[in-house]
Amino acid sequence: MSSSPTLSLPGGRNAALLQGAGFTAILAALLVVPLTIGNDFVTHIFITMCLMAALSTAWNLVGGFAGQMSLGHGVYYGIGAYAGVILMNMGISPWIGMFAGGLIAMVVGVVISYPCFRLKGPFYSLASIAFLEVFRVLALHFSSLTGGATGLMIPLNLGWTWMVFRERWPSLVIIFGMLLVTLAVAAAVRRSRLGFYLIATRERESAARAAGVQTVRVRLIAVAISSFLCAMLGTFHAMYLTFIEPAAMFSLTFSIQIAMFALIGGLGTVRGPLLGAVLLVPITEWARAVLGASALGLHGFVYGSVLILVVLFMPNGIIGFLSRYAGKQNAEDAAPATTQTDTIKAPAAPLVPPAPDRAGIGADIMRVEHLNKHFGGLHVTRDISFTLREGEILGLIGPNGAGKTTLFNMLSGFLSPDSGSVSLRGPDGKFHTPANPADFAALGMGRTFQIVQPFAAMTVEENIMVGAFYRHHDEKAARESARETAWRMGLGPLLNSEARGLTIGGLKRLEVARVMAMEPRVLLLDEVMAGINQTDVRRAIDLMLSIRDSGVSIIAIEHVMQAVMSLSDRVIVLASGEVIAEGDPRDVVRDPHVIEAYLGKEFADAQA
Image 1: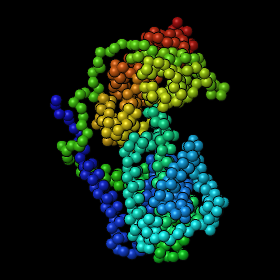
Image 2: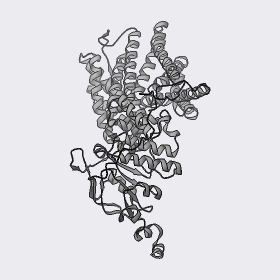
Image 3: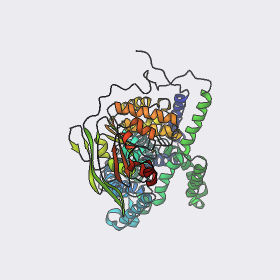
Image 4: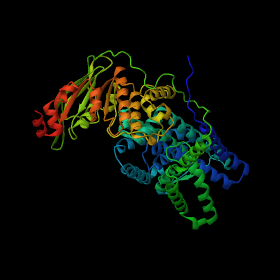
């Protein structure tokens, strides 16, 4: 077998190694510097840095990866603090109490978040603040358990068993270890199927649902992990402070600070929250020590000033700025060097391999029966019925406003019909009626959207991996499948490019590639050729024929008549929500009812 050609990506690996070495150096400094200096105040600052970095990293699972801007995450921190202290007063070690608090926080987090995830825009953030206030009031009310407004003291039982020490360095060792655990969890989530699904949900929820992602479920998993980690950190901090009270444990200011470190360092990144904490905590702690009482509220001014600067000059945070700078530097370094290679290999086969002998059109794979949909008094679809057969391309055409996209949304589970049904033949040979996009995906349906919906913050490879994860749960297998699909779709040279940088034609091919990575049996294409040039139209036609000849059945909405005539085995024409013609493309375009729908009655009469 001949060796495969490779793509030149010089400098990228060196930059990644350099960034990794810098991150490791910062982590090591958090432990080595205070132990070397041996000053209690310096050690306290480093303990605070580790704590804030860990809390912000835990928050980032929800606020960064999942895109849910929680401003009440102090709820889980407070639950962990109170659970640890209450159990310690009962003679139970905080090493056990932190896990108990974590489990309670997980349950509370899921119960709170499940209804709140239905809220859009700023309302989720407002709801999280409301629940934070509710828990503060509850802590004040149940004074027999929580101590109310007077708070709770912990027994001064010194030693590792009780997590209470005269010196500060043992607390530093503990919180540094907890920071490492939190970072490891965040890194594992980001590289996993869950991490890809969370970011896909954050970027384009409808596209994620079309890829079979159960968006509410993955967000709840992120909340469960995040709340557990925050509660454990809350238990440690309570032991370190030796005193807790509701206003401090369920503080809105503290909750916002947690989010600020991730926003400034780099939202949705593993390293960002740590960088944000390392930058801001020393400044505010030093100012408090130097200025004393006159520095009250100074931390808010510092955070606000830094946030304004970041928004203006580093909108993607410190990590985004460093990555962009490194990318420019790599591009400059790579200019004369075109012979170096990286790990992305192009297959020896052509980008779109020749199609095998077509098996022909088979039995029905989808049945659409009497679909009706109203929006208020508007009857959008009227008694639509048709079938789709194996290995067939069914063209769906009609003038604007005919109801085509509404029909597609019902065919893929994004809209429920007022009456009628859509059924798909499953692998068991029986017809099933799915209820939502995840059920449709499970039966082998994939779809694109009229307005392309890429996951803009991801690379081309990562976009396609979101689809590949539906069939391959392992990251390595999903990555291999994504790369193979990318080369088949003509996107191989762009694997490392961010999706936001592609042309409209490239974005449409990317969306098709993401769906094809799911290995669908039925493919719904919503105007994939709209807005692209003639060369891309020809490539798209060849690609669709290749997909069809591989055994995938296709329903395509198109306004490009060249494509409809070249692709379709059969055409359905919609007008005013009704099927007015169906059959061979050449016959349909001559149908007087079709001519009237597109050009008007006068033109149809003239033709007759």
